[in-house]
Length: 327
Ligand code: SF4
Image (cartoon, rainbow, N blue to C red; front, side):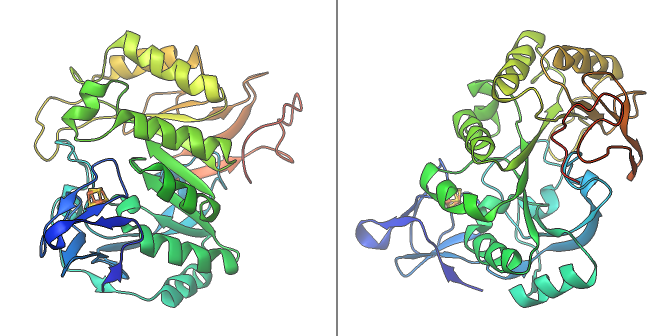
């Protein structure tokens, strides 16, 4: 379904310029922007995938991953097609790099499904949700009216004005901070500063934020740069959870998978600057539980996607340390 885009400018000869993300695509009639699903039809810009989903599922919240936000709960997760980045290692390239067949769904149906299945809310995920902007905003508003949470799993590449308008509707986010250099972001056709602005803005607006960093050998495994990234996150708050994720060859990248020793080393570096660091896509003993940063008491035990929460009233049961974990 078509919905006219909220942020664009009309240029000469029916060309439009999208203002949603740092690409600022200039789009000729009958063409799409870099993200695939924003199209110029007769000199107007439209979201062409409004109410159209490529994927839907009830996922453990730990799969987003969010480890400090209603641990052990399930969340109705939806996505469409397209992305405004072009990562050669995309894990969801089947839906992000081309338009697949999509099912039409109404916002009411999504809300009802979430309620029926006792979901804590709706996660906009699988492909990049920021390019689905108008549908995410409209669905989020209805979700809030129905006391459901809204979660974005995103690359954070969005301009300031649309982000400011989105903020009141979002409760939690996992942001993929893919690297910490302009060169890395140039490689994936993204924008580091926009991602950092996103993280800083959501954090300062009291939205629950967790960060994922996929570590790719030879690409973003420089220790000094990684330490700088951890320091930057810690400068916002040492309590922001950081998920280090093991890379496996996928899509157009065939570099061999990240060695376990690299992940162990990076885990230790990150722990110098942050209280909560996790390693995913591989089992490394001791890197998947939540422990009190004050007295090291086990707070959340995780076995796969099953969790055991040992926190009482958002505090450590042993030392009473107050924790940033939403239960
Ligand atoms: S949201 Fe899509 S169309 Fe708009 S500027 Fe970004 S990539 Fe281009």
